[in-house]
Length: 88
Image 1: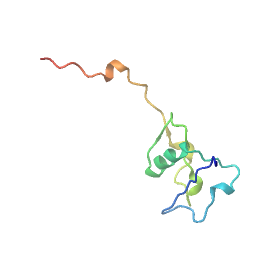
Image 2: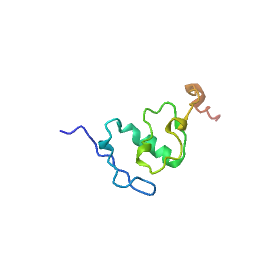
Image 3: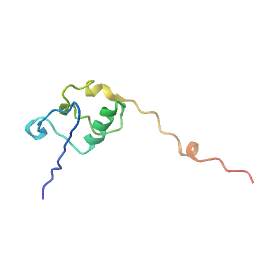
Image 4: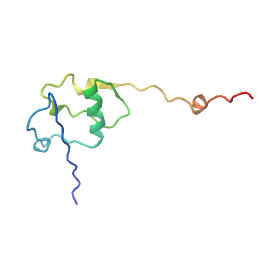
């Protein structure tokens, strides 16, 4: 069985006839799909996300991929997430 999953992108500003598999230095993982979607939408990438935007697919990347990572706030304690009881 193949361990490779086809990763296909199409649309405005996407490089035409570009084959990601021809670049031996480029490794694309399934986690990169989410990161690339965040990049396309112009949203900052939370620091805890493992993937990276695949900017090689674009004619002209908007910003360097390293600059799209946003710091993540501290986790909210469970007690703060629990709704207060409703008085009878």
